[in-house]
Length: 214
Image 1 (cartoon, rainbow, N blue to C red):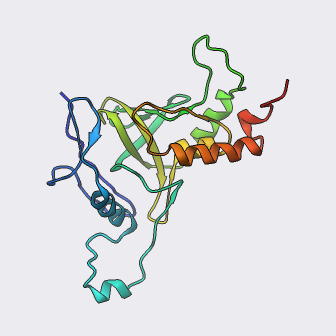
Image 2: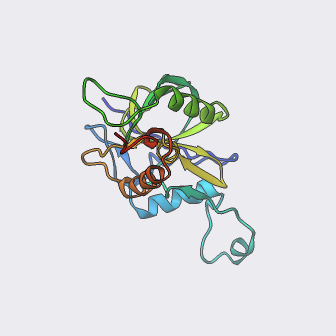
């Protein structure tokens, strides 16, 4: 039976448990997160950026200097779960201290099966880049689309702090280590990922270096 996700946004000493509150997203029987709306996103973002508890009527809080988080490529569409990074178990799979394993979705970084590919994937370089990005992170943030946080998960990985949060899936596309793969029923970042991919292609980065050449 799928567990309810206790979503924790913990950045710079700030913690916010979002699950268990009325109207917050949970994992349904199909393993998919549901129930997220703009107010939930705003509440989560406030916690991440250090603005939790702010009200429009609080003049003092409005006047205080507060950090504003920059998101790449855009703000998360679902709540984030803070987990301790352990190690990479594959080019697109990350394991955490709690035993959970996340498969990065929306991207492809290696040849799959016997399918003919016109792209020169670079799994070794992709793994090295991803490992370098993650080894410096004690805590990372998982945007779970399906699965169980203590088991097999599928979704997006975020790194950063209260100043900047970056989507690892998008960074891999930006640097030319991955190509966009559209997932049926999951199109949260398709537009952003496509734009980033076009820039990487135009600049002949990574897997696009020899694209279009015979």
